[in-house]
Image 1 (cartoon, rainbow, N blue to C red):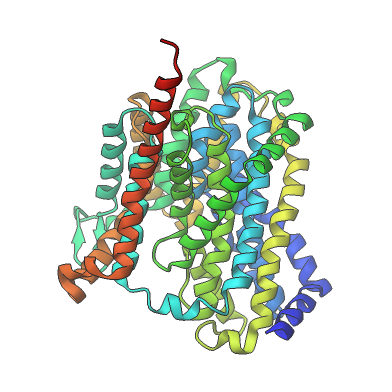
Image 2 (cartoon, rainbow, N blue to C red):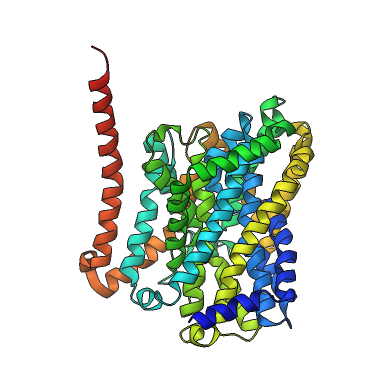
Length: 499
């Protein structure tokens, strides 16, 4: 094993591999900066370019571009309030309020360092877990995947701030929206109203762009208030360094969030988009003052960004060891393996451990390089945005339209961007949680599918499986312990208060 790891390091140091990584990082960052062009889109667009390359060179190019998309997306999320890609929506809850009160540099610095260190944790996890987790993942059944999805759904009650009922209502509506189209198990179409487009249900990218981008663009177009402009001095070098230091100060939060990303990425079927929401909910759940979350709390930026990049290391484990993609992006990367003549799955690590090690190191190098590039590019991006809001709205709307159309090249996606834009504006005006709706939409199909399989295979007794019981206890304990701790702090404060 040591020899294989050493061969992986030597393979990575080849000049063509390093050049492929260096070329891919700026491309991936551009895909992240442009609203709607997610890591999935980046892989789909770049896939034809690797045909005929050496396997490690082509895979390094694809993985490096995919790994840094969320790093670029965090900057768009903080500066504009528009998620660069769907998983960046969790960063929106605290990143945008920080930018509006003049702390954009602090938020961006914290996000970039969290992204880089999260990617390093993902690399370490991949190197450490590859030899051991194959038998564990094989024995994870549908009941355990359902319980993990239930764990993610439980965070709907946490990620929203303000009215708990509104958060739950938004999450429930998101689950309802996920029920449109073919049911994954039975193949029966639901709520499709005779439209072929609706047979596949609502698409994620139009929903995200409509919910989050359109309301911000409308505000930019109709409001002349200065608070919608990000001034260049708010991202000065001092403010960026301050944010970077804060990410290191909250290192235990960062590490916990990164490992949450790794664990979510390990489980095929749960979905990588879930990880940042679970990390954000965990950070809020265990905070001494959870009321600060959603108002511009730097911890609310660090947690989702650390998990965003760490989850790719976790998602590579089942992809390489079992041939089961750990996230939607890994589905396309799996196609890249086949295109380049490699077959991930059982036995892959016996013959290609050096490739797995090299890809783990590519994750680390790409994430560190992305931070360096973004630190140089952020002042330029901010100056481009330093125009009147009504002038900025039109080009942003063009980017949103192009981002929505580029995914499937379907004009119906543009119609639903407008529909979800109206819904997002209403939800924003009425203080309903848009991230809670997105989390319900992402996890709804997983919850339904694996509940159906579990009931068919085991009946109601699947709830008594050890793995399921452990996860349910984690859900209950996750809610009970923070409440108990806050009660203790309140009682201690009452005792210490003067009579």
